[in-house]
Length: 276
Ligand SMILES: [Zn+2]
Image (spheres, protein in one colour):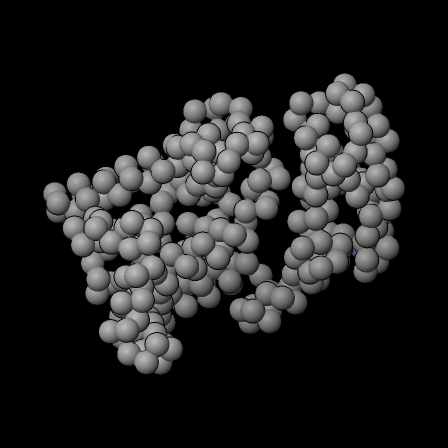
């Protein structure tokens, strides 16, 4: 739990919008004794916190505090965390130390390869069949499902690209949709974190665009979340969806750059495909 009630902050061009958006009447350049509930959840401000297991008190950043808290929905000091960590490792992998876990991940890959013909279950024939079966069950037939999916894609104006082989062939469609859906789910889970830890600069051209949220979301200058390695690239190269949706693979860029970039990536993919 957090002991500190307030933190001394100076209002600057990076944080002023954050406080104004919360209805606070702050003035640029002024110093405030700010109630911690108004601080950005993942900010660098130091706060005093107390371990919920042993009661030891420690000073650390808001960011570290919340990352710690989110692991187990409670804040624990390093030594108490070790206990929880070991417990969860033991439960998850049957080992309580990471080097064993490494080997257990390897082992899981091997088992998967042996059982499903691919290190990652998502990319295996088994997974494709299973997806097809699920869709069959859900929509009462693969045919109907494909039409439904096509309708949805048509709305996004993507059907032509698929027909020309720009994205993925139809027989891989459900697999691709599944992969993309998983990546998007992981991405959404990371969105808040990336946004809150963002320095306001466009990842690709370095322009300060934090104030661009004032534009309409359809505007080419509106800040959007982007995958550095695209989802299609991840799909084609059997990269685990966790890696594509990971915080490390996410950045923020203007909508305009984002859309032109995703075309480029897809074109890269086509060129590569045509050469091979
Ligand atoms: Zn403790």
